[in-house]
Image 1 (cartoon, rainbow, N blue to C red):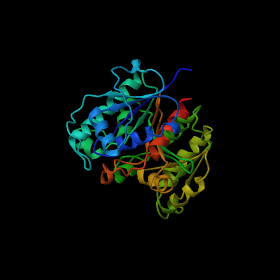
Image 2 (image 1 turned 60 degrees about the vertical axis):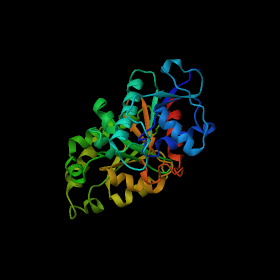
Image 3 (image 1 turned 135 degrees about the horizontal axis):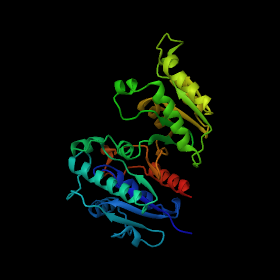
Length: 323
């Protein structure tokens, strides 16, 4: 059997990305039997190993093709980090994390990496470095316009119609044609995948899903017509449901996905029930890309306190989807 190769980007050097990656690799028995390639900096990895008291043997590989057998290696990416500074956003760390990610995506598009797991980056650090993308998904969306941000756990599954936008922009983005196309794109992105989804529930925009027009008309004028059109295409989709109850309807239902209309509508309930084990999955790509569902956690960076559970689950899910 040919071993698959999973690339892991180390994320922002000032955050917990390297810590949770090394902690995950230290529990190799929990992970799929694949080749792991870390995209990052030897300086950052060695500093984190000293901080954690770990002695993982992570050789440097000069080419992805040279890796033999199930092991983990470091692919050194040229970056501006000379001294590791943790605990706050910085332009240097932002540039480094972007270069790690950019190189990993390049190798994945070349077919040298089969799937990708990305440790957390700081949007603030990227902005300080002059990088215009709001995050991983936005960068991927420029290359693959079908990209969809979703979140998966055993307890709850959520797909976001919009994500890193100001709330006023997110509301303005809601229109019938775009919603309808999103519904079909989401269904298609899951077709044939091991991320099973048989039912889609759409959250309303307004309290009580508009309360028959008393609290807003977006549900009757925009969202419901888009759902009806998707149903006519054979999609098992229902709604719009009051946002304060739709997640209860999907909780514990492994083949049900809630479609949230903006970032916090979906992420607040998801992180409430699945913060430690939740996984961010980018759908609509020609390869698998996952990530922990949390951020850089600057407040605990360098303290050895970060929980690697979400990173472990992201790697495990990637391995299952790659089989």
